[in-house]
Image 1 (cartoon, rainbow, N blue to C red):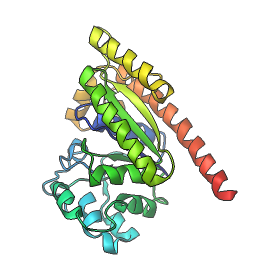
Image 2 (image 1 turned 90 degrees about the vertical axis):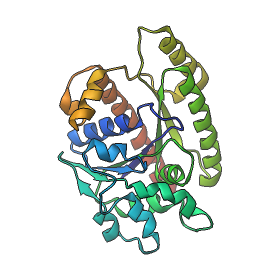
Image 3 (image 1 turned 60 degrees about the vertical axis):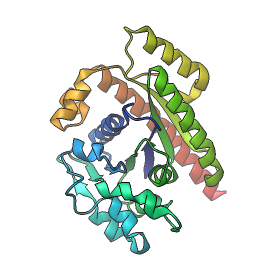
Length: 269
């Protein structure tokens, strides 16, 4: 199973939209998709009309029951969305208490990694949406993934968040003992504004081939899809943003499968 985390230490850059768009497109291709919501605000869960205030089992359950975590328990946290091949482990507002609980408690950093591993036979790909804060939730999301996708709004303040995110990656590389593959995805690009054009140029100059060659444009249909509670490609099969996400998915899958082959070769040697 492939596992991708969508993260940035700045909010409002398109993390949840990117998670839903890529997950929906994977499901359209016949892949079995598991979405995990690690944000206490529960935007991903709310997108699919699950209320973080009232869900019974959630990603918080995985942490709360980590000492007795089993495949059966992990599966009990999964809910079906209305869309074929697209399942979700929703968020609970109780996730907000984890930072306080994590102090002096062992085993908190690999809970999601363990859960994803237990579900690897059930799904082809897992996409993890996490909060814009460096803490136990983001650390779990980074530890659980093979590839990281960093959406970055093409505006000046988002560049500062990207700097913090790359510093976090350097820290995580030391603990993982191997680099984490990542792709920077320019989002909310508005070709009509010099600020957006300049920011995109700065991102590409600073991060080179770490940046996806495309860009996700500003597109009001993404907001409309969210309001309707459906993946963007089902709301509008052809459009600027949907076409961009199709291109991004193709790019990511080619890199992900290459990583899987390298890991298999390393395990066999």
